[in-house]
Length: 101
Image 1 (cartoon, rainbow, N blue to C red):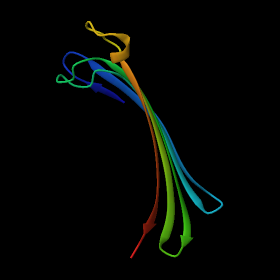
Image 2: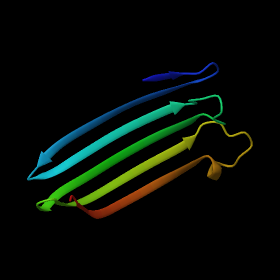
Image 3: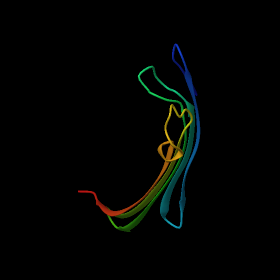
Image 4: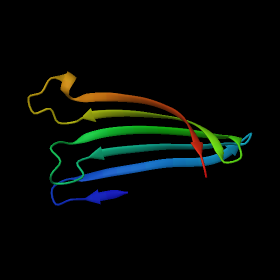
């Protein structure tokens, strides 16, 4: 997918899959973005995003959920900033119980 703007463009591509293994629903996705998406964005960047979610039914209408997300952001233009300001990594893990009424 290519997003055009008058000055720059962002290129994004992704891959996702959903399946069920031993009764557990698994949803995984990967997204890669490079560039500057809009005129109001201040800099070019390169992002890699991994997302994984698991849902396992424990009773009728009750599901255990476990998820994780990994984001690696690299700033491609440095405009006088140090290397520490150019990139960051986010790691997130979530867990919970879903109840349907």
